[in-house]
Length: 124
Image 1 (spheres, rainbow, N blue to C red):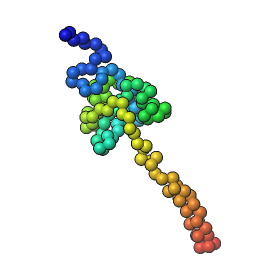
Image 2: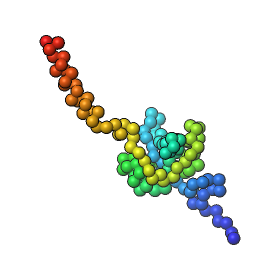
Image 3: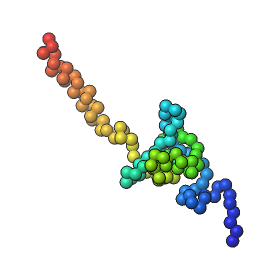
Image 4: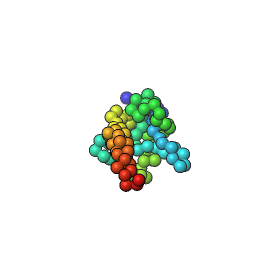
């Protein structure tokens, strides 16, 4: 059996498919910065998607991305202590700021006039 070495074939040491991945980024002071995520158990992981469609389905249409190979993404993540690379994650949770119940915002708005009206007799 002969072995073919094509550019699309993964390297034996790489546990993910070779080729360019769509890597989510965010703007930073020096340009774009790769976004890193948490696994369900809380560990940090680099994330890449095999297609732009999968990136959009998971993170939304407004998510900026760049194309990087898996080894290049690992090279960015390793100095930060991130050893895991997740390709095509399916499950995501909303950002922490999106999980705040809206009723808290309503309490702040309705509570402020009550405080002001309570202070009015004292102010004069």
